[in-house]
Image (cartoon, helix red, strand yellow):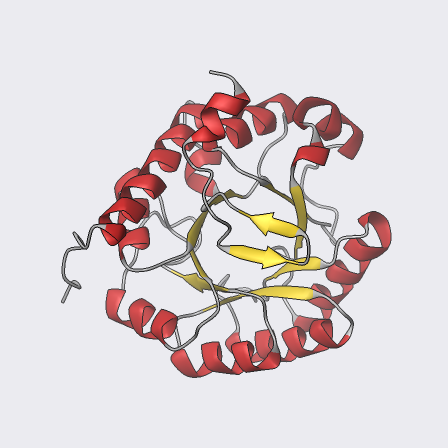
Amino acid sequence: MSSATASKDVVTEPWLCLGDRAFRSRLILGIEQYTDPTLVADVLRAAGCDVFITTFDLEQTRPSLLMSDLDQAVGLDDYVWIGTTSFARSRQDALLTARRLRESYGIDIMKLDVRPSDNLPDNGQTITAAAELLAEGFEVLPFILPDPETAVALEQAGCAALRVMASPVASARGVVDERAVRDTMSAVSIPVVLEGGLGTPAQVVRAMELGADAVLVNTAVAQAPQPAVLAESMRHAVRAGRLAVDQDLVAPLAD
């Protein structure tokens, strides 16, 4: 299947616009776990993604791909570039990572993560870091635990979108507290991405049914026996969940 064919059925009206950069695909894939640029290209095309995410590992303990190799395999000009601070364990690390990404690549859209040693988003540090990045001219997409008060604070600060944790990263548990997630999404008017622990297409369908504007998947696809096949399955799951919402066919909240 060509990349044009793979992405055709997920191209919709943008769910997020930042200046002249439009986010149309409602499936976002993290690529931090890959070591083969050709595989990165395969999964992004199979998923119909239009976003490319990159980061710095401040500790320099994780494998990384050369940007030149990625550009040759992926064709990076075809994607909206955003940065991520997904390896940051503190507010200070998140700020340093964001600034280095802007200095090196001109990236000003930041997928903000502040996850201490427990690997769960620290809502308080995230609010503080978001305010600092916004003051420096970044567009900020922060990752938080479900909490309406935090969501409202970040919206009022000027964040472009929110990312809400469905369940712990890499847990494959799906959306563990549907009511808390729904309440958090309902508290704001900016787009919301659900991510963390979305390990199967069925879980992605449910995330979309709950009202997410998009989902972000990483570990499930990266560790699958055939990552590109699961990426394509996730693409169809996003579409199925969105159609269920459009047709008012959503199952009630879990108890």
